[in-house]
Length: 226
Image 1 (cartoon, one colour):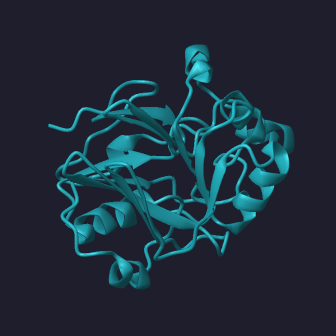
Image 2 (image 1 turned 120 degrees about the horizontal axis):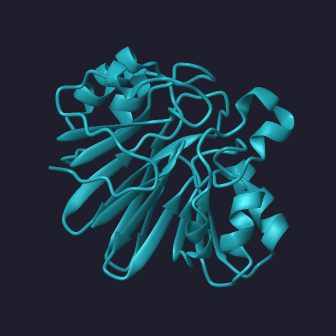
């Protein structure tokens, strides 16, 4: 399993010949509506030529479902696209019935070959937001998506040992701050915790995330779990 941070909440998983993109944001489209949120890290252009097998969307906010980014990936037919209702409708409308679109709600499970995706709750300003647990190569990876710390999330998590949890730490826009994110990660029991949602629109330091088994990612580099 190779995992690469794409910046913001974006991740790329590569496993057994399959490429999975999660919430890729590789444009500056947010700045067009929120000028203060101009990206501080240039786009790595070669990432735009990837041909993903699966695109996972956690919710319908522009830095998670970005047509300027997804145009590079979804204009070629044949992708599996998982998204909650807002993103599901938007992407079907933009790209037509050339992909296999799955309307995701919390509790859904989808198996694609030897990879399983499970949708779990998130507590965010998009009421349809979800997180995902990706299971492959005998390990489980929890991508929370944008969320606050909410007790109801833990009650809904499947009883699976988690290799890593990937979660926001920016503390704005209905996301956890670093302190709550650290407690959230500990509560999941995940072996490792990877902070996301920092450094693209802000100067937030990931050092504020004090989880004892943190793995701090770098833009566009592989996330190596010890």
